[in-house]
Image 1 (cartoon, rainbow, N blue to C red):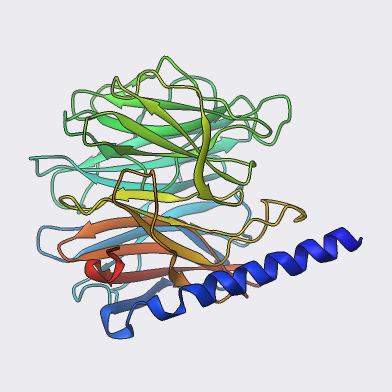
Image 2: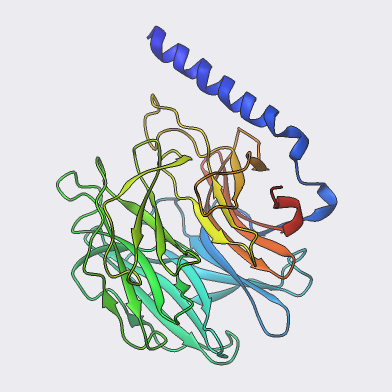
Length: 369
């Protein structure tokens, strides 16, 4: 009992030290745009797993998963959307971007504009049971006004998870979707493993990677991808090990090295890693505090911070606070650099209600020296 009390004190003290150490580096309020595309209600207590894309007329389209009645991953849900014509300060009327086509729900959105193309792709998950979850993709050639019917990417049996805002296109043109897969979710007999699905014809056909990446305990979860300057890939992995783990690929995501711990602390929560333009490096968003005595997830997903790396993840800047109210939790971050800003969306949870927040931050305010 004493050790648990001591650990709780140390954890709380660490959070205070963390926030105190970076308090002088808070992003100036004038440089931030904040808004709420979706607020939790009794009818819709959870709004999460969203993404944002800039349309050709300069407006923003935000999409997210709107759950019904409960906040469970298995509650009924569809993909909702709203548009903004003023950079995310205000949002137009809400609409259904994608109806629920699953026996349970349709969730977890990723947008992608194809390189040198007018075509948009929209990826999402169709959930039928704890043993049946599939990744699909739709296409739009009219700036998200209409979409094709969903095309299934994961053709194998099982439960296949791709987080929101995870699909990427490499400099070679290859499309990549990082996926966690298992025969039965929440089963100790079937730990999660990470695979990649890739396409070399703009998403018309897909292949699965030869390798599946493993991590101890519950397994490898909710991967994200980034391309290095030399063309190789780094995959970040949600784990139960107290930190992000990573693995590498030198053949466009088909084969992967053995997973290993990385230098970024994290509870069992997804993190988001994106490239910055030019030689400005990488930008990661994560929850920096782990509580080994927590009943689940290695502690609460709070605070939310950003860090910059100038050397492709070998070292990181001090934490830059994005959200520091420890009474709330923050997760499932989408992040995109657009002109001189970073556009974010993520859930903010309080008292088991999940609202979707949008935040636009000047890129210069996140730059490390």
